Image: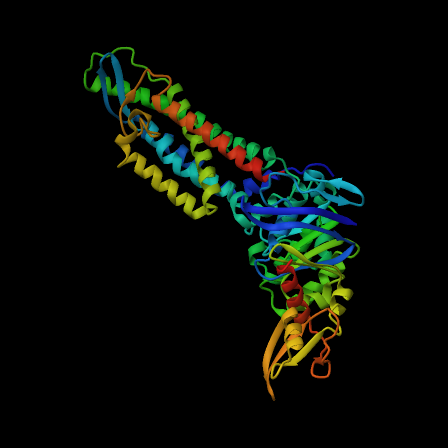
Length: 241
Length: 294
């Protein structure tokens, strides 16, 4: 008998329903062309800013799915009674945590990539309509999918790690979910100005620079993810022998 | 034979919960007893690596020193109020545990049915765990402990919250299912001892109060428990009472009567002291008190 392995079927079993809802939501957004709408397009000091709903749908709304899915998948890992049992199995940290976290992030992101590509094309259509409609003199305004792809990746990994870190502290699924939902709403609303361009939801409710490959908030999301990831690694290392 | 040596643990630096515990476990049923808060659950969780510890717990199993994963592979743990993935079917839970334990052979559907049959839960295999009764859930817990054919089984108050009738069934099942294995079962229910125990480990405030065969434990105070009327005690009688462990007192015909235990020589005034047969409660109280006083 060697080391044990995590049965990923249990993760699929507990998360398939919210995951299907997540996929349906993404499909609905592109099918109904929600991202075509352009609120504004203007040049400020040589930089073109666009106000689009693409990040609102693919980052802000998706955040709630990410939080819910993370708590679903890791509910038994952090619940005290099952946590103490899982730790007695001959499983490695990678089996209990790292591989499952990676798989969750990959599953969330893989389905998002094609809808972001379609959504970006819709934004470009919207920009052309906007330029023609308002008879603007802007030329060669092409919206690239890369900033959105990077931003959504940063947001997904940050929220997966943040949810787990809070879950490890509270050991309570409903409380963790509610606290993070409230955090998202606060950051998007009353606390918006506190974080400025480093706000996790920068671009969701405000214009963002169209030619920037990496939006400024991606750095803050990735740095926080690294810190949370290290904290979680040491947390599991102290528990799993 | 399983041996544990010099085990200490504290949740905080200056607050030790377990103090230098050493004991041996023979094949058969060893009951770990002690008052609430005596450190039973901490000891159990430490043994099964369910507590964060700076160093891995070491155990000598049949002369071989084991720790970490090697120890986990020899051991099964059934926590108080066993519950994992309650919304899943019993079959799926057993398969999950088999894979987590690295017991590939036990993942086969036939083997899962066989294990379920051994604890009489085969008819619940396709039922969700949360829909099973408490008694059935505990039996499912035993089934998970059997997976991987471990040599050492550790159970933490498995009958907590189970009604007396179900508890008797549970004991029978535990005896049958774990026959020939080394079992450590933590409990604070005195009745459990007479039914189950081959050996007893009693801890009091994290210190070893007793470790040995249950038969010896049960008879260890024979002839050493007295009932003493407290009226007009002589100085030597009074000194004897002070050196004894007070087990209780009640209002007798001629005044208050103390029930005491003392394993020293019998008191001089044996005619005034009535020797009584010790109850399990007497023995329990005696060793708890002795453990507290080191």
